[in-house]
Image 1: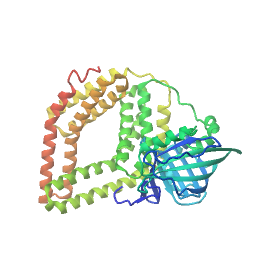
Image 2: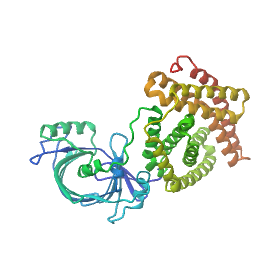
Image 3: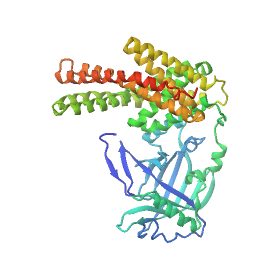
Image 4: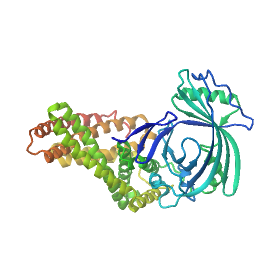
Length: 492
């Protein structure tokens, strides 16, 4: 977030803070090793010039989860650890594919800090968090350095003693964590470790190994298998809402945007297949969630566009830029506060429960998705033709909503239709964006009129936004023709 301090961790990972919570990306690989395993000579591997300065740590970690291990089943781990260089509370969540996101918070109490509970609220809902396992680790940590003394990675040789449900297990493993090196270093080290007898770890984490039996026994209702593309698409949106929830709570623009898009996609799908779902109340609640997210996202987008316009206008518009910034930052701040409150509300948790009930069903009788998408698209075409003929702003906006619904309906069938559907999705996205630029210009003019009705500088910007709107609308017919080409609509 803008204005948040950044720091460099001792491991060399870039981190940032949100309040008291430190957030970093962790990239590591884990290996099971035999009792007699010895770390091989790694000098000369992947640019490694030295392996001196090993440190020994005794770590003691208590892991927290719900009774049915909801965090573990959703690839999240929460612990309180003592010993080592980063004692305190750690929450690990799925990252962007190249690593995991770790949230760190100092403290040694027995209650999970509220800041971390909030980050898993969408997963645990109303279930309490309590201790589920204790892991004590004797660690020998060796830095792998290049010729300039830079730490490329850390190798941790761990002897683990795990206690859970009265049982104790002991094993050895090796972790290699990337610091200032790249993935090639991990690949080279991995090959040398394999030659020495290491093998990929059995589970994604130590605690997953400790709780393997309990995980297998405490799975909640099994999600019914399905090949129905409507259910599969709806599940993707549910998972996206849950996945972006933590960062959206911090007001991060990308997360807020993606969570809102997933909410809209799910609501649009319920509308497209309303006879099959019959979920008007759920659609209304999804509209509420999208609106709360939009109260953050819309002024973020508007601020970016308007400030870009002001910069183009020249330095004499500096005062105008500050007024725009102050106004929209206030709206963003208010929206973030309302979003944070909404995501902690019973209303939001009830909505998530309803979504789970909806998408975890296995069977659903729906119309043919291809035919349904075709009908939705034909309706959007008709709306646009009527809107362009009338020139009424509200009708043009409604036609954009129609194409958004059509685009999502085509996205749903894309996995089975491959290139033809993807080509149509792109064309519909371009058309939707063109209509969106027109709508954005209308909203921007409203803000400018509100801020400076009698100001020359605001009048200049208002006129430029009028021009932006005219140009955007003038380009819509060509985008519509491109989206209606026979080659583009070959999917039907």
